[in-house]
Length: 401
View 1: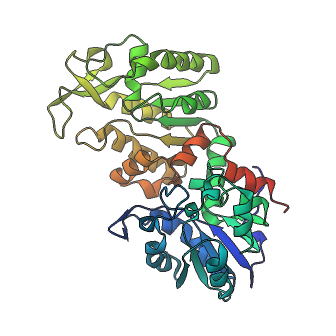
View 2 (view 1 turned 90 degrees about the vertical axis):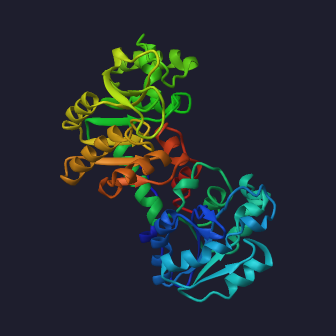
């Protein structure tokens, strides 16, 4: 894959290392409610500190739009970051200027400092070089560990990488290596699962994948639009009528590329969408005019399992059905467990990502059984779409700096 430096390539003892983390975590009443991002970033911070670096952590939080908003301070994150990193974490109430410079100057080898929200300065989101240079003054090296923010050409994610010798942190490294194995240079056959509610939000993703994979599985409500494009009556099911031509184009592209496009052949339908609603399983050609498709049926899962047996690499983004509401979670759970079994047996490399996908795999109890589960959200989706991520490109291009 394209080359980039990692922590193994840096001699950090006694050096000031700026670490771009993504600590934009869910908060309620001043407390962190989901630690997953902090826990992913902590190993890099801990490793650098153990190697004797003076670790200076940068992150954004929320959308203050270049102004100081007290409720968007990173200070409440300090206790959880310290716990995850196993180190005391100091805090500076700005990320540039005297407050930041004095806090950095006070650091000793092996100590950790968190700087205030980078987005309190308009230069951050604008990617301004002057702002990035103010950050660069604070460090000797730059380590980007925030893949989830790498699709933004901001000062602390992209511009800074051109101003200091730069490397990927452990979380960024793992993300890049797994995504490369999954899509750029996969062991074939390659199968992709794309689900969710709307075709319109995943057009670029579908068009990129249909040209790359042997099998493209389409689930969730977006599958209804594809069924409608084939002239199948789908009753009251959610359908994007303005995307039927798009679906038809992707179906045609699959025939050109030779990809198998796997759509539901049977479905779980109900007359109302609520937990434990009266429901039945029918062939997709037998959906009643007053019914809606809310999940795939067992025949669809059986076909998925058949395809899975010859698959060596799998990429997953989006659920098969309305998994948040029982009993319409059955298809997603069954598919997830099949992938987990193949992965654990060593027969499959499985990479998944996206908010709904992570939630679905956690619901199925198999997230830890996949080869890799990305928590990067938008950056993961843009990578699957084939887009260049500015933060990643900067790491590659600045390797020799």
